[in-house]
Image (cartoon, rainbow, N blue to C red):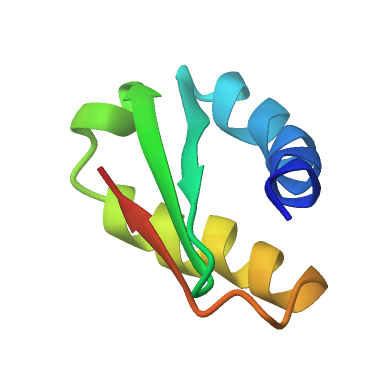
Length: 73
């Protein structure tokens, strides 16, 4: 499951990198919780919660319905 999530994140990363940010996968738990770290401009951006939920989480859950949530660590 972690490889699948990493593959999805790789498709999202170029959009974030274009704005000076990035995302890295930290962990995927057996109960469907994905933990990511936002870095660069995304790490300190006041809109990072929206990026996390409306972009990253939405895309991952769309492609992997067994994922329940994406959390920032």
